[in-house]
Length: 61
Image (cartoon, rainbow, N blue to C red; front, side):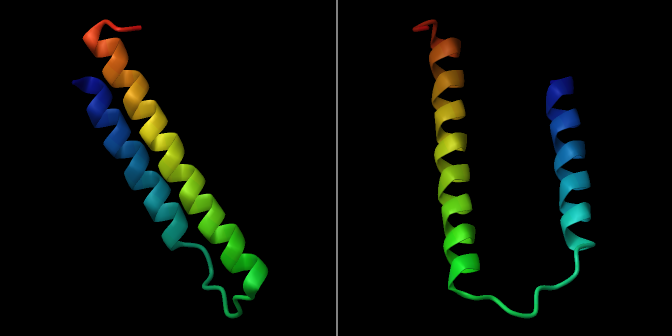
């Protein structure tokens, strides 16, 4: 379970770095599309990694 502790520390560092970024004043259509595409790809990647982990854990892979 030491990996879980390292993951939470990494998540905390990433969140603190994001909070230090300056606030974006203008958001046009290109930025909105890029943001939505990034969110969708992140969710799909997370689900793919979760499925791979579940298959390895069950011995199917």
